[in-house]
Amino acid sequence: METTIEAAQPYASLAGEGEVTWFQPNRMEIKATAEATGGAYGLVESWIRAGSSPPLHVHHREDEAFFVLEGRVRFRCADRDIVGGPGSFVFLPRDVPHTFVVEGDEDAHMLTLLSPGGGERFFIEGGRAPEGPGLPPPGAPDVAKLRELGPRFGNEILGPPIAPEGR
Image (tube, rainbow, N blue to C red; front, top):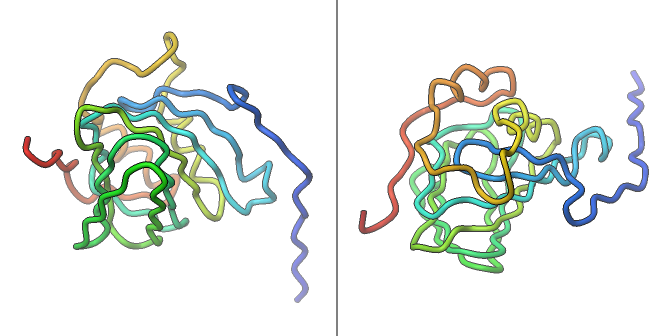
């Protein structure tokens, strides 16, 4: 049986051109979607409030990789902690429980690559239209909402967020 894969067309998302959402206490701009990349990946630019952490979770459909542009982020993948600052790259494979927390007083700015694509829609469907520039008001993650939406995207909530060191 022969499988045909549709080739992606050239695509660009310039500064400020992506679809923006307030997802939990984060501002996210979807830079590339599965539709734009022939299914290869989704790319999300995120601004994440200091002290913020998503609940411990697992992706069953895609790998997730992060590139830290600003801030200090502690990633937890299975039983390993990795602390990264600007210029750090962290790869988190599918089916491995993970989370992260933004350490210190500085907000983080990161790129997130989801491969294959499709998982980037989770942030749009789970978020809301921004009410202005910048980050949404601070607050804890809405775990009930994430649990409800997760199965549609192959995500599963396994535990609580993690606290920044020293708090």
